[in-house]
Amino acid sequence: MSSVTDLRYLITPGGSLTGRLRVPGDKSISHRSIMLAAIAEGRSRISGFLEGADALATLAAFRAMGVEIERSDTGELQVAGVGMRGLKSPEGPLDMGNSGTAMRLLSGLLAGQTFPVTLIGDASLTRRPMRRVTEPLARMGARILTSPDGTAPLRIEPTPRLSGIEYPLPMASAQVKSCLMLAGLYAEGETCVIETEPTRDHTERMLTAFGYPVRRQGSRVCLSGGGRLTGCRLRIPADISSAAFFLVGASIAPGSDLLLEEVGINPTRVGVINILRTMGADIELLDRRVAGGEPVADIRVKSARLHGIRIPVDQVPLAIDEFPAIFIAAACAEGETLLSGAAELRVKESDRIQVMADGLTRLGIEAEPTPDGIRILGGELGSTEAGEGAIDAQGDHRIAMSFAVAGLRARGPIEVRDCANVETSFPGFAELSAGAGLGIREFQA
Ligand code: S3P
Image (cartoon, rainbow, N blue to C red; front, side, top):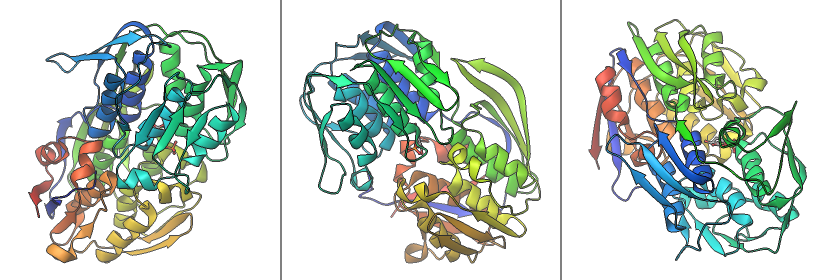
């Protein structure tokens, strides 16, 4: 969904973040809530759903496959589950927009259907690697055609049967794990995925909430095909990945004191909190509780003096989406921050190592990319020229928001271009962050 008209941010330097706010619902959990509710028996009610373009692409895909999904005035969704075998052939290709999660998880869920279906996406998604899902799915008996480069469009043909597999993940990827588990629902026998490092476990938790047995033993997670899901009520917490911009913004902006409400703090997602705390951040978790099978808390963050660190490699999968924001923290910290073991960042919505390094360099920060990470030396953030001199977010929502909060500590105004995709994960970002104290203005160029 790279923008035709270029939505830009202009950030006035300075200010602090104060008050309390709730960022929108968790993107990963929102996708899964529609997928599982659709193939469950009976109705499900989902509150806190993220109405951003990515999760809405998943919602539209299931509507196109005959699932009735209604939205109440309060934003609660009611999904009339059609059962494991009730999806209908869609009339045309299913457009996953910018969303890797939608495409990879759906390829698993759809591999075992009785109708053919084609998954397409925008220019960014069409560049992203899909063999990581199509290869193990093929071993299960799936028939999926990709482009010669192993990218979308994905043409999924019906197959007489899928068989369970035992699959050690070659990379830390919750998307691959979840894809295979969703295919495993339709497979004969047992499907087991073995993780080298823990990744987000929302699929496992949510399958359990829908009454589907999932067995975990250490790093191995297994399920047997042929069971059934039962519709349920789900409450989706605020997205820690969206909260991350405020965790960083409030940490770097002097005088900040901000409360973020009902944020998901699943242990497989809290790398950003662990990393920022190691850098010296003042982050408190208040009123911890469980909602919809997921741990949540209110998070209080105050400004603090940050120092550079060597980011522990075991935190990388737990903070995989938060690195653009963490790099801004590193740029404002004293000393050097080193990241390694994060080559996956190069195949996200953009090459996040290179695009962040380019933007930081433009702001006068020493940022040296490596094949699997980056070295950032903290310093004073400069400003950008308008127009051609603006920072290019390259259509990557998280890069746009990261440079927006960088404005809190910049010497002069920052202009960020190609920001329209912020809509994929964080609709209302500009209004919400302006309300908390960020000097942000959106305009079309
Ligand atoms: C996601 C998993 C992560 C993450 C993505 C969402 C998910 O991708 O980057 O934004 O919902 O499962 P990988 O598992 O491929 O690292």
